[in-house]
Image 1 (cartoon, rainbow, N blue to C red):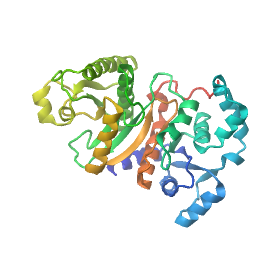
Image 2 (tube, helix red, strand yellow; image 1 turned 30 degrees about the vertical axis):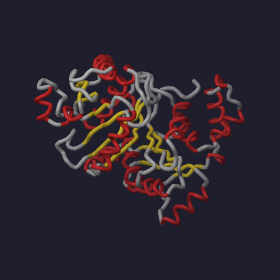
Image 3 (tube, rainbow, N blue to C red; image 1 turned 90 degrees about the vertical axis):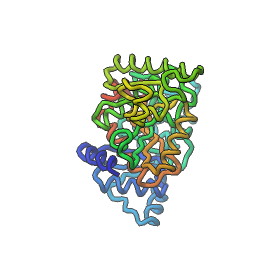
Length: 350
């Protein structure tokens, strides 16, 4: 709660509009209520108005200050359909197919964010990742300064000796199964940018492997080494202030006395605040181990590299988790153009 409390304080000074496509989901209703009560901005629920009100009433959750939109009855439906048809015309999408898509809350919500009718999107409590990501990739796409969309988990552990006062940023834990060297470098830089915005300090980024500085040989190690060098180059080009090191074993990245033995001159070793996993297997397994075994507060997946802020939360998330992710997405939206220069400048189809 230390971390989310700080995020909430920052967002209260610059409230934002967050759209929740899963409007009847009990955990979402509770998170939306808290979002409004904490003066973080306007929560927007999508779905059938009657069903949302019935669900809220059964939970004794007030909908005061919460906006409800039924895509099927929305005055923006026709314009959204035309935008989406234009976007997907090269794929042969017909008008009727575009309309059917826009009636799906995740598609409608993505278009709301793309059209600046909401500042960010949070979904995934009752749907698989693909159902959340597909509309975002088709409508919002990647930001101008990157070619890679990925995801990040923000972990808050009780032991404040790790990371930045117990806070760790882990990526990619949810999008790219086997990132290339270029993608891995993009993931490292995007995660560093997010950590820099949230923490206000210079991120220390460790690109992880089962080897530390050549202690083993394998093609996957060479990929991490190359990605580290490329991340340094990309960070310099985009003026991202961060320190990068790799390949590092996770103990060398997090434990000072081990880092002192294995790499005494590293700016990152033993003090990493950002952990970049070599593939999705490692990222997903590692983040869930920390969440459940170490009982960490886990906030994610925060999507990185998109043209607008969004998150795909776990189906195992509770209302507090969803509120925390929503606050982070709102915080991203405050200065999103600093994270990705040029992001959000154009409307879909232009």
